[in-house]
Every structure is written in structure tokens, then in C-alpha cells.
Length: 222
Ligand code: PGA
Image (cartoon, rainbow, N blue to C red; front, top):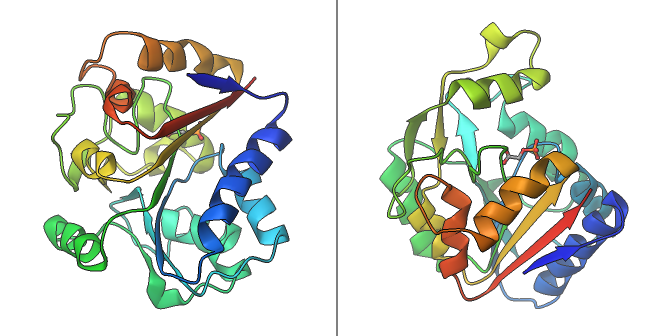
């Protein structure tokens, strides 16, 4: 079921409420976090709330194969928009790394993911699991599609600067989360969201796998 919200502000604060609920217990929580334009309002809201992040470990969904100190890396994005503005310990946030199965070992060592927040790409991708990705996929190095390179070029000086490869959590990895929240913003996402949530469950629409999870919430605003 797609929950339609009135505004981007409401989308951001609704998902911030879900994160806040997760953080109140003084028990370590494992969160999976997305990048992109959709969660920017969520991160702004979380910073404003001055929550206690000292019992939180985060795992980002994906990262380009590039120098993590590069200003357009997801490391830089997360530090700028969230991590450097909250009280999370720097050794408690992780990005997918190689060897990729060691990243999975790291997650498993700490236990399950309690809450996974996702965006959705125009082609139905989640993280960098592009159409055709196996539903059983694990964290791995992937080639980005032309479409994703084009979509993400808005964050770079030129399309030629967009990395061609990334490391992404797999669909199988994401599905092991105890709870999943999908955020989508903008009328251009509505069609793919409907296809993913109400259409056939198929590897050609990676987000459609979420229909098989029993604790998923989907929030949309136009
Ligand atoms: P966006 O990206 O938030 O920038 O629209 C979402 C995604 O591609 O997963």
C-alpha cells in the first residue's frame, strides 16, 4: 500500500518519526541509509531533532567506486548532510567496501538490520540494483546503466565524471532487514512506484521484490 502524503515536508517528517521511534531504546540499532535527493529533507529533519545517535550503527546502501574523499562520493554526501551534524561515532558508520562479502560479514557480526530506508530510481532500482538484478543478490560491484549515469550526472560537473561502477548492497541483503521504509518524491516516480508495489513481482523491476517482505511501508508525495 502506498501512503500518499501532502508535501515533501510531511514525507520527511513522517520518515523522521519512524527513525526517531527506532532510536529511543538504549539498545544498539542497525540502520540502512540511502543517498540521493529524496532523503535530504529527512536528514535535515533528523539533525534538527537532536536525537541520540550514540547507540546507532549505520550501513549505507551503496557507494561509487571512487575515492571516498571525493566531494561527490556518498561518504562525502553522508558526512555533509548527516554524520558530521549528529553525535554518531565515526567508527559506527559503514559503506559497502571490498571484499564485498566482508561487508556482509560486518552486518551479520552486529546482528540484523532493524530499519532499512530506501529510495527508488526511475527504472525501479533500489540501491544500485538495476533491472535484471537477481532477487538473491548480495553486496557486490556493479556496472551502472546509461540511465542511472544520466540521472546522477546532475550531481557531478559533467556526465563524464560520473563513475561507471559502484558497490551496492544486494536485494537479498536488503530483504533481510526487519523493517523497510521506501520513500519516493515527485510525480515522475508515481508510475514506477505503482508498477513496483502493485504489478508483477519480477527481477526486471527490482523494487517489486518488496511485495514479498512482510514489514514494508511506502511513502510518496508529488
Ligand atoms: P533520488 O534517487 O532520491 O535522487 O530520486 C533515488 C534512487 O535512485 O534510488
